[in-house]
Length: 191
Image (cartoon, rainbow, N blue to C red):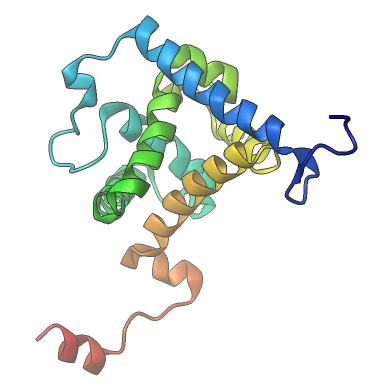
């Protein structure tokens, strides 16, 4: 089969075979990374107080929060920590409420990003808690601008989870101009 007759996929115009290689490559990388690093049962358990998020996930989303939600810079350090904690609760609740298939896909992404050597190769970030806002924004920009659908999807999921978790919190409402729910509607729903 010559290059011109090979099936094409999507708007990027890349052969489907290239996309399959990426998917297979990530699966192999995750398998090898897990085998090399090893995963104890403790690493597979959610953090106390959470239903879905593991310790590495908490580190990831704590680092993503200020890189994705620029409004966090308007709060002092104590307020930022509290807001990020609330954001983690929203993210955890969102992921725990997803169907099992979606949870498995997100878990693959989060597990891949929890393995330090693979994380560095894929994102350029060593430890989440040591990466600055600029480094994390650069990684997200690379992923979201990548020609590979897998990276695009992963970057979009991380950004959407982080951003929506903030904008669901009442503390974010003034920065968006949302005055909050109408008192009579809120009282009617919550009575």
